[in-house]
Each structure stands twice: as structure tokens, then as C-alpha cells.
Image (spheres, rainbow, N blue to C red):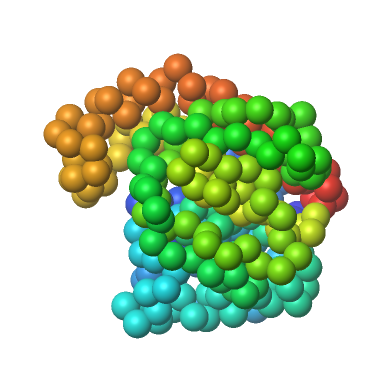
Length: 236
């Protein structure tokens, strides 16, 4: 049975749709709750690493010192072991910083439904069968400023240059949230709704749900396509 190691940064931000996808493919899943003081285990016995999103920033190592050990583990996994990796939002940014890139405050925040465009010059197998512009869910205030040496940008948006990033054929980072489902967006907890109102004004949750509803099935299909490509390329 293949084993997935998941780094989670907030108690209410988990694998979501990817839990279903991984289990359907026979993965066992070990989740490390870094925010709760859980330690990173030995990496040798795992087949896949997934790093999730979070409200903290990659540079906040004083406030969240576990970010240092997490980045060391990502570096060992991606650079040292060259094993399959997927990072989402903060996980995407930590992929960059772990390998010598940089992350900073975004020039413009993206919250709710936005659009990203796959680079027409890219023919990376992770995005095989996908082209053009896609609606995606976003919630980020930081962005990759400098891409690590040897990494390739696969997608961008009007406000964020690096929406997807590949390192070789084994590591993928995405700024957007393709792990969310419509049920998850509808059930965001109170703390998320308060933050959302600060971003988009009162009643934002209803507007985000209305925006997402006609597109979420397509977003989930895109997630299945990317996951299928990723599995094939990495022989998972």
C-alpha cells in the first residue's frame, strides 16, 4: 500500500477532496499537525508528500518555528530524494523557499473565485490535457517572487505570476485551491467567515458560494486530471 505524508498547518484546513482521491487509489495517509507541535517523521517509508495551505506566511519562522523544520523536510524530499510532492497555496510557496526561491507580500490579493491561465509555452505532463484559462478558488496574500533554479512556471493569473510551478517531473506547487469542494466552501467555520468579510465585505460568504457553484464541478475535474497526470508521471 502506498503511503502519503501530509503536512497540515491549521486544524480546519485538511486534504478535503484529495483525501477521497488518495484513498480511492489505495493510499494510506499520515497527517502531521505541525501547528499542534507534532514532529516530522522519518521520510524514508513514504511515497508521496503533500503540503497544505495555511493562514501563516512562509517567512514567519519566529511566530511559527516549526516552519524551519518543515522546509528542511521539503528540501530533503524534493531535492535530496527527488520523490513525488504536491504543495497547495502555502505548500506551493514553501516548495519555492525550500529550494532557494523567495516569497513575499502579494502585489494584489486573490480571494474567492478567480481565473488562472496555463502557460501556452509549457508542455509539462502535469497539465496534459489542459490548456487555456480556468476558474479556480483562491485565498492568498503572499506570492512567489523568485522561482528556484531549475523550476518551471506552468500557470499564471492577471495578479499572480506564479500560479503553478513544477520542479522536474516529481514536484508540483499550485497557488490555487483545487482541493476544496463546494460542500467545504459552504461549511467554512465562523473564523473563516469573519476573515472573508474583512477581505470582501459583509455577506461575502454568500457571494463566494454563488460564484463557485457553477464552476466547482469543473475545478474538481481539473484536480482529477492533474492528479491522474501526476500519478502517471511518477508511477504511483
